[in-house]
Amino acid sequence: MKDMNQCPICGGSNFERREVTETFEYKGQSLEYPNYVVYACGSCGEEIVDSKCLKESDRKIRDFYRQVDGLLTL
Ligand SMILES: [Zn+2]
Image (cartoon, rainbow, N blue to C red):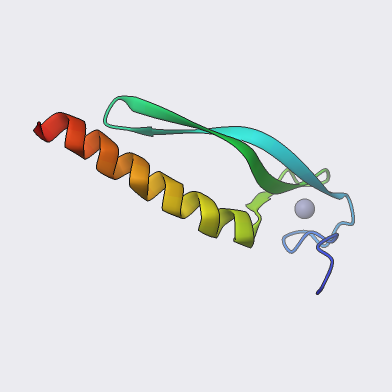
């Protein structure tokens, strides 16, 4: 497995793994997603979401969307 410590945008090595709480909004409802893993570049400011985290959050976000749609159609 390759370590992600170099920015693919500017090539800088100032690339840091960060865990943040990301907030997603959908139709006026919001979902707080803790431990959202992003890599942030200290040189150019680029932020890239960890691919594994993206897959996991994608599932939860879809559930959230369904839940919101369910609330609105009841
Ligand atoms: Zn960069």
